[in-house]
Length: 380
Image (cartoon, rainbow, N blue to C red):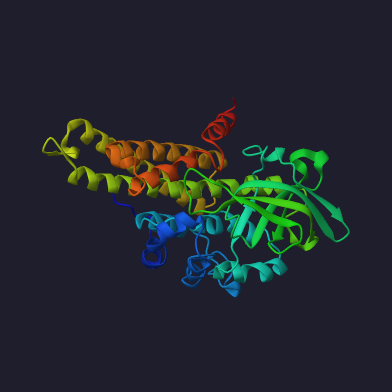
């Protein structure tokens, strides 16, 4: 189905993104998968090419342009080229809303130039060992002492956690107030008392570094508060639709990559003297996947346009996130099945895609949480 949401400037941007992933990322897939992280040089190159932080004001190196179609293109070209690992989605899809939308002029001057250049890698510290989808249940605290906050606690499952130079931490500045006592505070990586734990050994997305983070009497100036004190929960909730939209922009192109690989395999692989794609049962599976992928793409494109217009609701983003990630998993699992025994061999890209796709149904809010959010919005 022909897509009509892109303008010429988007296609120029796509050519830049494709060239970056083809030359700077795809050749390093095995290296980064083994190391469990990407090179900082790739981040800097992305910054040089304008693939980070285009939403930032021009005075800080950006374009002052908020258009999620650019985010969408970065994700599409990353998966189309078979690249892995580089956490541009964290930088562009999630952190931009906080570092650009909630910061003071002084904070922008401090943080945005390095962020846009890819020299300052960012992460967001929400999840904890006992608090995932339940943001109100976090235990990390930030006690006010004069002109500093003193942070104590632990975070886990933090993407970019190993490489991050700057972490936006959700902490309770008023523990007795529950969700009404959460604030967002930036911790820079060289701050005393801030340490990284182990790099988590994950089933998939092995080239994307995920870590435990620890805060032991970490003193940061009050000038590192992002947004309003004790309003952090509401800042997070307001920005979660964009995070969930970003997850969907991963789900659809990852599924498309899997289907493309499977179509090639089903054409070349023969059984009983016939290409396996010609067997009726397999032909029907391929037809179902193609149709569901086109539906998912159309759904996603419309949500991107709604986000650009400021009309994407929390419920719509939740619906998009759960539906596209579940369709993604259905397609990936079927594609792996069609590869037969070879689909279970790590040297085949389909095996990595299958592993990498599973977490999409978990982070950003599980499928069950997304459905519950929608159900509650319907009055139940």
